[in-house]
Length: 119
Image 1 (cartoon, helix red, strand yellow):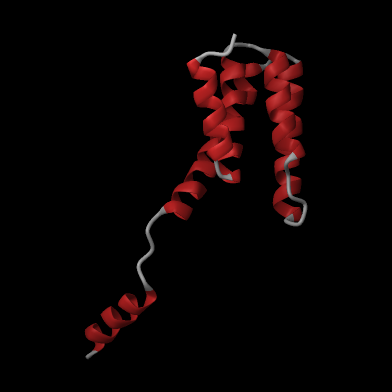
Image 2: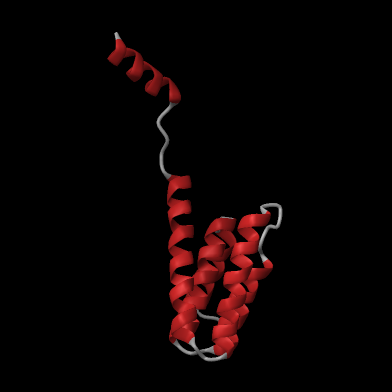
């Protein structure tokens, strides 16, 4: 049965930036760990792992190790440990998203401000 909540979620996904989709995947993984839903948690973390961009090899390899560790924890039903790591990673991605969306001061104003101080 397709309800209004599902329609809203579909629209949210369709309009989300790639970065926000990553955060949404973390939300699903974390919620699944809370519910001890192994199948959904494994799918969510696997989706995060499969989305890694190895053009940024060092970061991707570090995240790959963390995701594999989380997957192992979930398979062992150590949901709290996986959740703890996922929450920290999610917070980092939210910080990045917030920084990207923050209004930026034009450089000319910064230059004028600095010039005014030194005059």
